[in-house]
Amino acid sequence: MASADRVEPPAAARANGEAGRRGGWIAAAAVLAGVAVHAVLLGAVALDCHLDIYPSHRGNPADEAYFLQRIWQVAFGAPATRTLLWNEVGSGLVRGLHFEPGLALYVPLVRLWPDVGTLVLGQALLISLGALPAYAIGRRLAGDRAAAVLLAWAWLAAAAGWRMGSGEFRPFVSSVPFMAGALAAALAGRAGWAFALALAAASFREEVAFFVLAAVPAVAWAGRGEGRGRTAWWALAGAALAWIAVLRAFHGGATRFVDLAGMPRAVIENLLHPVPIDPTSPSPQDPSWSEIGTYLWTTLGPGAALAPLAPLWALGMAFQAVAYKVSFAALAGLPRLHSYQYLAPVLAVLPALQAAALGRLSRWGARAAVRVWRGLEEAPVRAWVARAGAAAILAAQVAAFRAEPPLHWGPAIAWLRGQRVVSAGHEPPWPLLRRIPAAEPVLASTTLSRLVAARPVVYSTADWRTPEERARVVGAVAWAAMLESESWEEDLRAAGFEAVGQAGGVRVFHRPSGPPRPSPPLTPGAPLPP
Image (cartoon, rainbow, N blue to C red; front, side):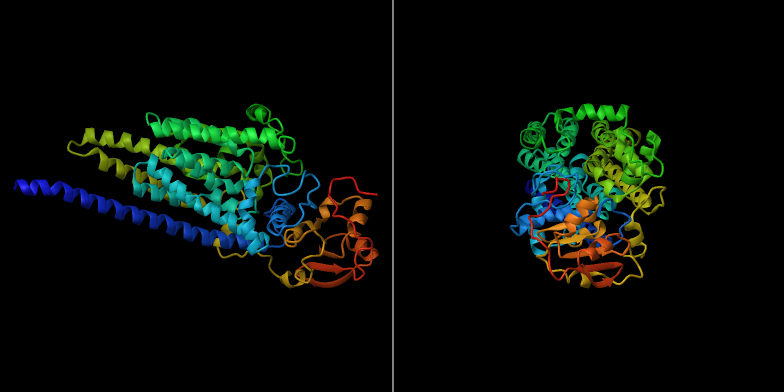
């Protein structure tokens, strides 16, 4: 009997270990299955939206052309020459109005498939991969593996991710999985990974470093009393501060945030005196805080209602929300999917807020249950409370996703309902656009510029406005792709262009004689050369 007593504990330990490993594999498979399904659906939606040549859901298609041009030049070794966006500065992958060296991540993909579709598909995949750190955060803060899986699925169902993924390509959105990963690594006490992932997140937009700093107090509180936890949140803060130093030293003159130290002050001023929204909006007035709350509720989902149970995480999210109050104003008056990029850092913190709130709720619920029902063990009750809460969040998230809110839900909902976004009744223009030689400079309508940007030189009609500018850019190309609604046909005909085809509301023109005088690529916004 004594021998049996000595054997049982190791056997029980082995059984528990095997059960734990089996549970870990099941949880990993469940999360990866969710990521795969989400990536396929969101990728299909994003590609469907990309194929729409009349994209009402896009803010400025020339922005996508600009991103593709910068990445394409690096991928194929072309000179760093900016020929798009008159209000931009600098040229190349790094030097621009924003500091976005993280775009280098897309260089190998564009090398394989030089098209804007590559960018939107890569962006959709990154949003899907954000469920992996969401699961890790849930495992750490909620304290239960099954609850963490449900929270990862809830993150995949978040309308904010679908809105960002079904809109145009924006580098800011790519920071989401890296910022969430940095938080997950810091919560796990992995300082090196926290530092590296925080730097990676900040490389997609200069403001991200400030949002990482805003989350540091919550990370520090979660890891209090743990040596590795203290090291990790210092690594997180160090990465953000190091990136801010890089911005000030290397890029301060080219970014919108020239005085980066003034960003907290700018946030406070934005709160007290919000900047007016675009006057072209149907309702040009500053939104009320109730409107902003409604917007956050319908976009982030009911899981954000747990904010009172996780105040430090809520404060980090509030800093980000206030920083972009003007963007919420723009959305309230003129909803456009490209503006949802500003939710990227908010979405990255959302799983931590939900998991921390569930962890606290499960502790309170388990203690109360043990006091009421004698004989109960606290650990199993905590697990079931966390699972029930996570299931409720997932159900509410799906319900909010399917609801019809007052704001524009974008093409994702239409696609999931079987309504294709690609403009109906139009012949696809792709065969016609392929007739333009890939090495030739081309002048394109702003809407079409993103479809022909995989070349050394592409110009957008929106950047050339005066008669002198129009004549100059027409004289610099031999090919042009125009929408039927464009008013450039007279300029093209006068310069010797001939129509070579028409399809899907698109017309392509060619000048057989070529440009009258070859010249270096023109830079929009710069003084025209004599």
